[in-house]
Length: 304
Length: 330
Image 1 (cartoon, each protein chain N blue to C red):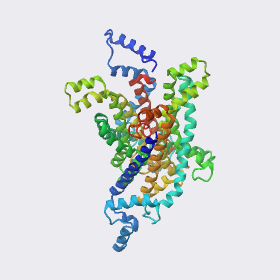
Image 2: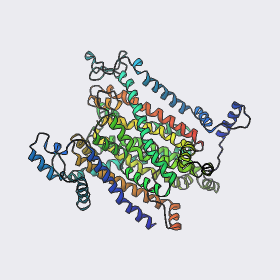
Image 3: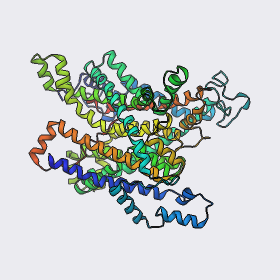
Image 4: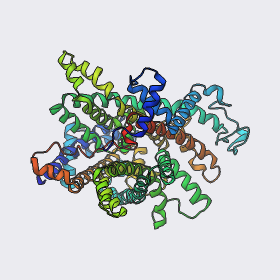
């Protein structure tokens, strides 16, 4: 590390000083990161798309011109038109409306998967890092074994064994990604574990739980937050791939992957059925990745 | 050094056993009676009993698990298929080379594309080259693989009709599946190469090399890339894992006769021994790959080598190379 304070950071510091009007008092790390994030155009684009997608999900029933199951048998497989912006599928359902409603499925499922994986994996990872030695050894060895099955294969195997459906899909994805999350929380906690403030906390008699939850995790949050963003992107991709393979969310539900799965036989006759749900997945994942990149650079300016 | 390699090799035993436990547990929690899938739901009770006996399903779980492990270790036997009674290993041994070829070639192609791109964008940081490459890389990691495959099929097989849509008969057949599995890897590896390279070219020894008058290309490739390669190699292990998963999807889309297609067909037929067999073979393959990457890592990085020689005793095997990469396996 040749230089810790880059010109970029100096510029931000100057700007901060001017804005806060508090003389030399530095802004909080969170505020500093937020200002850096706002300066990153791509991250802002990602953020705006994400907010829009959330709004679309919330107000789907006002935005979508047709219902999920509204069938129009006189208008089957019609090409995109003013009436049906994305065309209609083999049952005469409006694809635009179904893609809109799809946001209500992919987002929550992706977030729940990541939340669960972090809840379980994070618990073990934090314990492994905090207690070290034998606990670390045993927990991480078990995670190693879980990780020796590639995550996608693990998810397929679990979904195959439990059967299809949203709940089983969430279980499959959470369990298969859990070891990777444990590893991230473990390394994040390890990186702050030996700081002086932890020692002072211990010295004034803070319990292990308090040390871990109050002092270590909040300080280790940076890399975890970045990873959560990327993980949601990956989870959304996995949800749609699994649904495409017929191991996730089944047909009538307007999940993007299962819409593509239902349309794959129509490639020669009505390719438009295959285009739009995929674009929807890509935009969502791209927005999450843009935001995640910005978050990473904002929280750890050395990387840029 | 030798001690580490030995330790790492021995660690494979509990890993493989652990994988078998996981896979076996998954088959145990599958709802329904497997006999239904062997002889059919409305078979005579005697027939059902006979099938139960033949597949050893009447024995307790631990006996079956022991027999399964013993069969694999002694005879390479992965059990018999429920639907046709044939040994699973016969079918898998035909199909495995296809899956392996597909996975490895897509990783190799991805590396060939990603490494130069990553180096170039790091060396020319913030140039238009860098911006375009990184924007493309971000797109690549955000495209859903299976959808990309469908779009490739649509353009090259249906509209232009220049590439075949399925099979493995000619070299042309491999282009689309390799592109599908490789696209995410190109994006991911290019990003890793760039950030690793950026960190390296800021080091003092790079400045020293330049200052002493060494040619720029030599500094970049000999002093820079060789050192920047470490995180990339660490990522290749994960990349192969992700690609094995991608191969399963690709085999289903392009009807490639590999292990993945076999497993997916078996899942639909509720033929669990085949799913189990495929899973075991792919997981063991992945473990072996991770082992090789770990060993390669220690051989290449002189810092690690001296660490062994200095201390003799080393921390637990297998931990260092699991770099939490972006996307994919992470």
